[in-house]
Length: 86
Length: 270
Ligand SMILES: Nc1ncnc2c1ncn2[C@@H]1O[C@H](COP(=O)(O)OP(=O)(O)OP(=O)(O)O)[C@@H](O)[C@H]1O
Ligand SMILES: [Mg+2]
Image 1 (tube, each protein chain N blue to C red):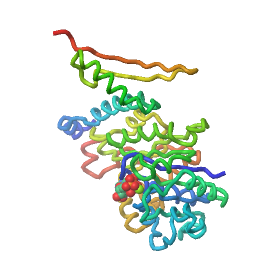
Image 2 (image 1 turned 120 degrees about the vertical axis):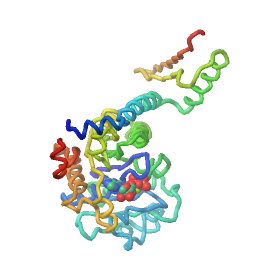
Image 3 (image 1 turned 45 degrees about the vertical axis):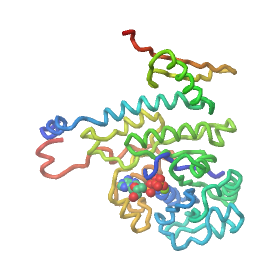
Image 4 (image 1 turned 180 degrees about the vertical axis):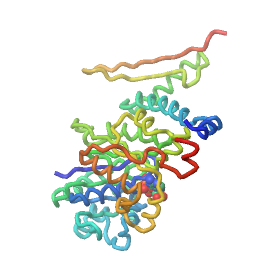
């Protein structure tokens, strides 16, 4: 690394790193919903609403995933991160 | 049998038309009978990039509607023996494209002896884009090293895997390639731009080529000459490599590291 690079890298935050991290998350999320039936987004939304009646949660605390296993078996996986009791 | 290649992206303005023109020309230069079709109904552009805008009489939609036959609508490229252009319509709306209509035109092109059919997709995920990718054997997912483009490319990959003819008929899946365009090695080095490796890792598809951000592209479009014909230019050479890889050659990447600078650069290193 040259002297110039040293000053350069000190001045500029490597925004590309942030971009990559954000993309990895959003792409993983997109892929998990791929191939899901058309009713899926709405169903997910309604599940979140139901949980919200009881616990205050944000959208990103819920992950709903549909896994197509072999044969004719699909598994609906629901993960909710509940807020810590305070 | 004709090989159908869609140049697609999801996001607009990433370089699909530039790439379609370059790749089609490159294939034709290598001796393959090639046709490039503009699927951007209502917003045709390919004719300008190919430099044949004043020779358009009939278009894709005319052929689908039976108002003209293929021979009347196909424009023979003036520079390149094996190359033909099928322009998009300027006036009709995109619902003019139907699966039956598009399928029939593609069959007729195959019967006419075309080896490669390049489909220049419009942006978005509406009818035009879906029609452009539906019949594809190969997809060239054109992507800029930038967050929204990469995300949209991933969405298009989802479409290729679920909404295409090959997906619907349970055939061998579409071959998916990444074409990274408008790449700036300098900005990658300073950490401002996603690197080739980053994008490859995120999208996890085979890399077909990297086209640098280049002044030659604007020059080429100004003149109506596909940039691949500018053989001295970085972008032209990068597209040439891309075409060779498409045809199965293994070539190292070029133009992915910072070009050598003059005197100052040498003093300060790297
Ligand atoms: N490698 C490159 N270097 C510099 N400029 C480029 C490069 N590739 C494309 N461009 C420019 O980017 C713009 C958009 O390119 P192009 O029309 O090929 O994109 P597109 O994906 O077909 O757009 P649309 O989605 O509107 O159809 C043009 O002005 C073009 O000159
Ligand atoms: Mg275009």
